[in-house]
Amino acid sequence: MTRQTQGSPVRKKKFASGLKRYGPPLLLLSPSILLIGIFVYYMIFRAAQMSMTNTTTTPQLMGKDPVEFVGLDNYVSLLTNADFQHSLMNLLIYTLVFIGGTMILGFFWAWLLDRRSRAEGIFRSLFLFPFAVSSIAAGVVWKWLLNANTGDLATGVNRLFQYIGLGFLQNGWTNGPDMVGAPGIGIIAVAIPAIWQMSGYVMALFLAGFRGISNEMREAARVDGATEWQLYRHVLFPQLSPVALSALIILGHMSLKVFDLVMALTGKSHRPTEVPAVSLYKLFNSKEYASASAVGVILLVIIAIVIIPYLVHIAREDK
Image (cartoon, rainbow, N blue to C red; front, side, top):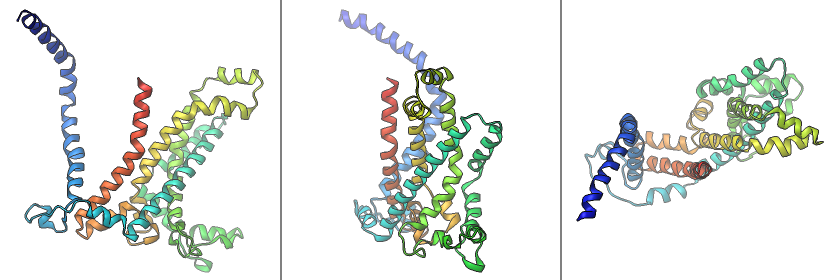
């Protein structure tokens, strides 16, 4: 009894101290926590719940008609559907081409600007400008540039090839199978404007990384006899790895959600460029609410597979 009597004021004092310390921040953050809890996590829960039902009509969606629990049937139906498998393959091809092209081009531009050009400010603005353009606007412009017409009717890039004597390079671009039946060619064409749009952003990330490396470190490596390649290989590149990892995660997350660019370039009914987000849109428009929710959950799982290892890595570095 004595220990309890003595310990109780101590516990109360610790509780009061903790409340005083963490109470105001929690109170300040509570509106955001509440909104995120309702409009993010609750909505994720509802989507996952709906994906395991047979909801296909508006009365069911509004809770007016009975809903039957079907388990993983919607997921099995989707993953065994040839059209959805095709959209997943398109997403994989788009992600690889988009990330690879953007990383290479962004790094190359950053490397050029790191050499302290006189017109650096102008070039930096030019490279960054596409990032400020919305995906819909970029898609509308590139839809004209990647027009599939050839010969006398050619416009955009095909017309340019014709003018410079490279007419044999004219092709159907986003039409995909029109190009000697090569699978994935249509979605690769969709990745071109995405690379154009995001390369400036990656350039800015890498340029900030280059500028964060002190000149003293570079000069020390040169004094020790390092060539330019050895300087980049053993001094600069290792210090840019956190920037590269961040860029990869950001680009990967963006590529998995691609929707507006595909819709602006080819529309929802163009199978060669269909991706899961477009499939979700079509299913929702067809009132296949449960299947649409299942597509959303599949995309969420794919994104989580990309993001969670990065978050774990960051948490371990902070310890």
